[in-house]
Length: 262
Image 1 (cartoon, one colour):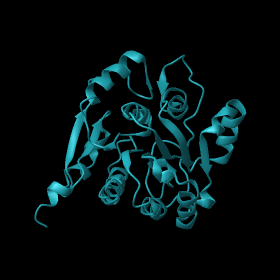
Image 2: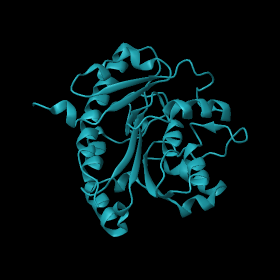
Image 3: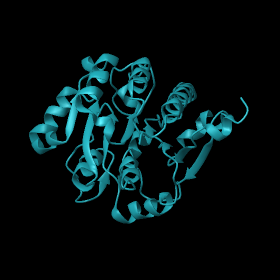
Image 4: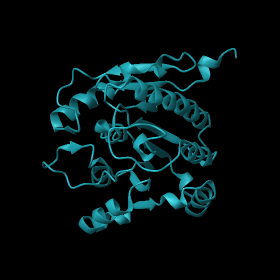
């Protein structure tokens, strides 16, 4: 075990609401944790205007850590701000019960429910999105209002969420020639697996682990974030989230041990 600390990928946890204070996963000394406390930044819950986005951009600009735990799903738009830092072509994999592709409600204000759509429209290096876990009815509503979104977004049904399916996708599309960013909202799992604030999907945690395990060995992960904490002051639900977060940290570390292919 000598030298283990040098080999671990540092992990940022973004303190947006204080919800993590009910958990202890980031105190586990097997990992290198780094807190970014943004509670002093005003007006960040669900929506952020351009001034607030710039304030957050300035804070994360010097950060090079690739793994980020970003609080509850109310702050999922932080994925967009992390991806803005990417300066090469890449693909995005989103695991989420919700499409997060709504029409912006207030002009160009960024929201947790529209950040994927904004990424498609504003990030020239983003070439394709794989979206896993969204309700079929919600996706149909998106395509009716935003049919052009189909050009970049490939929706993966829950039925297809098998190791064999993903291995076929990686082989057929050769996507692993591009780097990838992964964004996980834990509400893609059922509440019995992990309690979250929003409506939840049906994925099992083991299925999430299987997905991570199928990532090609030569895939380079530019970044990965996790959100989906339950903000309610419930000790037992917080401990269930803590357990999932600690397991996820281990799974993610194993993914990030791989080297970038030449």
